[in-house]
Image (tube, rainbow, N blue to C red; front, side, top):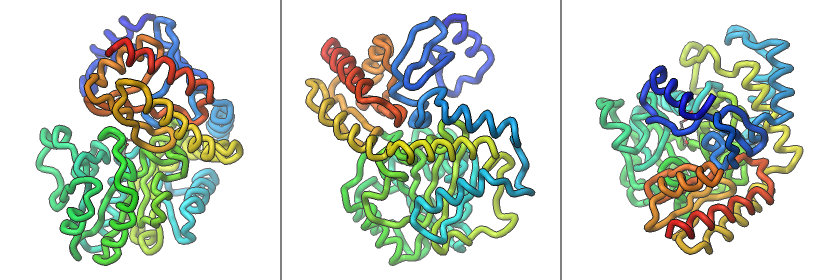
Length: 389
Ligand SMILES: *Cc1c(COP(=O)(O)O)cnc(C)c1O
């Protein structure tokens, strides 16, 4: 097996919606992955903020192996303990006693569920942010604020208004009594790790309260400890009506969730929504194992500290214009250097990242990353930037 052979087979058997990758990954342990040519990489993308415990983590192997050999799937006609335990855990993490969870597989589905939930308010209008990413299914795409992804698929659902992210005056004009929901990422991930002004979420919360609109926090990328807290919005002090999760939630297995708080928790009625695999015993067992491991190791505190370290170290590298984000979700703004070229050069040097936009490198390593691995990343990044200038 070689990268070239695997990529060629991929090209003739898999649709071309992603563009063609250059390497095939065949195994991983912790933050180190190996490609089909035998080359090793330090994985600083983590399956795009997904493999929070890295690759082949013992806690995950144990939980998944045990569950798949006990009870692997039951349908939603029956209760099973793993979904109940994870739902209780997630609800407790919101600090809202009435919070209730709907399980699905992905971020797009979690946001679709939020959209359908908001229709149960009797209103249909939605406000979202320009540049935001909420997924690729037709409802989620309707809320996604990136024209290039939307335009080939028009018409999308009606009544969605996109406003500049972080601009509270634009939001004030957009929200009316007819607004069913406002959806925002606490930090826009796909757009290039864009952080809003410190009081933005709090002010949007107040506008939603004044007009009776639901505030949906899309924590698909920022959630599960990535920013140093569980859902990425906690720094703002707000309580959202809905939180959507996926990516890190299953510790690398496909698991998503839409958590509704307060009155929103009871908007769905029997028959309103569903998913065959949603809250499957194996994926929820994985999610529980990931959360328990992170709690036992106090990972959130570590992530917060490591984020501060990385920001300080990266910001002073000549050629780096700015470092944005929180915890282990960082956007490294390059100014004049092309992010795609730097990502390629890093891959050659044995580090995986991605170019979130033409001038921004995004890093989202597993939350178990060690200080030594951060140091190694900074050294290689400095070398690559210096060589490129
Ligand atoms: C990745 C992402 C999604 C979509 O998740 P999928 O699992 O790919 O459907 C939605 N919202 C945000 C903020 C994301 O980062």
